[in-house]
Figure (cartoon, rainbow, N blue to C red):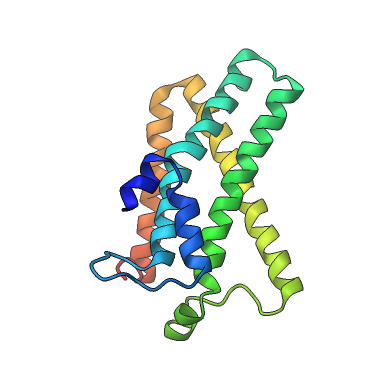
Length: 172
């Protein structure tokens, strides 16, 4: 049943429809619809969104310029990746069940529509900015030497894991 939606490239909209209509976890399903939607969006982000931004930025940097149409396409790609990332965070944080179960972790999105709108816009801006900065950094490092990209990832991921271990929240 789910294969049909996947083959038609409509898995994420189908999952969003299920979440919006309050569908419960089906018998035999590995996860609830909310988690399934987030995983689908994450896979889409890491397999399509981020690589397309990387390719577009590489083309702009190594060609020495970018046309207005390509710049607009790049900005749209970056913004859609930022939106997807922000939506995953926002959906998990505003889920009442998650907030009730773990209020120390969930709850950074404030109550009130105006404050939530500002928070969501900030999440989009931060995600989009981070993607742009990391993409440009990786491309500039690769222009100097490919080993620098490997060092960058090793230091980036290594420092993240080290901080998680020091804070005591490496395992959930």
